[in-house]
Image (cartoon, rainbow, N blue to C red; front, side, top):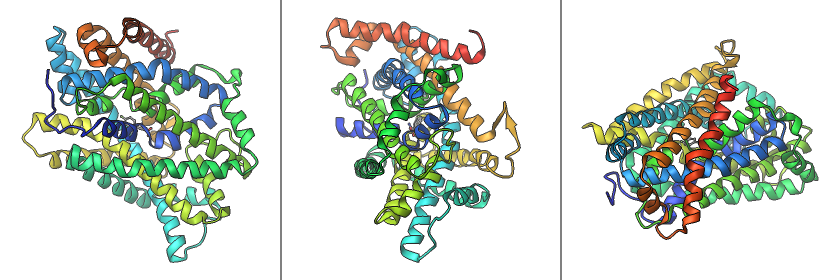
Length: 454
Ligand code: PFF
């Protein structure tokens, strides 16, 4: 068993928790969760999503960390080596490749949305320091941004440069330094926003919308979206957490860190929802059907009203960009680590090449917002189609294979040692059978539903 990775190691248990939480908490929590909850009718969606986190997300989170730490290499090579040691087919490395492709697609649109947040931080900066006009009509401001490919490409590019600079520096110098300073700041700002939301007088309504299930809104498409969101928000199914698991010291207890990461991520999404919906409602915005611009068109209304709102708006969007940043580095890390192991190129060159390709791919999402807005794939615009295929289909399929690998290919001796040698038998068996049977079945039913098998 390898005890260290060539890419470096997290310096402590807390560092891993911060990095994995940094990967998990991002646009998925603060941009995507509120908007898809809004588009899917609220309460029932939230409950299905929470069930997916617990019954599908958590077992797969453990599985990814186990595989990563046991393999101590990039996901592709870890899967290949572990499969060989277990007498299974080399084809398992294909799972790592699928993760690379999913990550490439996700990063391509993720970086465009992160670019929107950077642009908004800049708009508030201009208001605060350069006397620019207030965002009086947020809907028009957002519409103008989407209609301007040059602006979108610029900010998408800035964000990609930010991402690549951290990944190029490697684990200790790059990733750790970024997450340990920036993550705690995000929590504080979100709590302040929650405090403000509580004063709007619409907090109760928002709680009702988020937690009172309207079961009539449950349908196949909604369940697929809820499961996709569970994968997306926890960064699962594309081997990102597996890559981070490879840098986890051997003595760290996996169930404990896994639960900490999942609990923090879920809390951030719920806090974001509880902060954003009351604000939207108080300004007369319908909490249903908000679409991808939801936070960009609702929150600026609140920032216009709040004392220090402009400074706050700047801090909020800056921090959201940071949350996106600590996630995007985990999207770029798995392929970078693979090519560091398998080529003679330097980490820096590799990260740069992959980021440049991803940036170019992102142009498809940029243009789908304006000059190609008429083009549709399966009834969706290009950006939504990429988001759907990567997040709602590829991540669950990846998760299914990860669960099968951890549950059936790896020996019980290995998974038990990695999880926690001293854990009671019943607890281990529970994880094992959930991972072996229950989680794969749930994913199969949902994916089967999309393909029309059921
Ligand atoms: N979990 C991130 C978010 O919620 O914003 C997005 C993400 C990061 C998805 C890394 C997948 C991944 F591998």
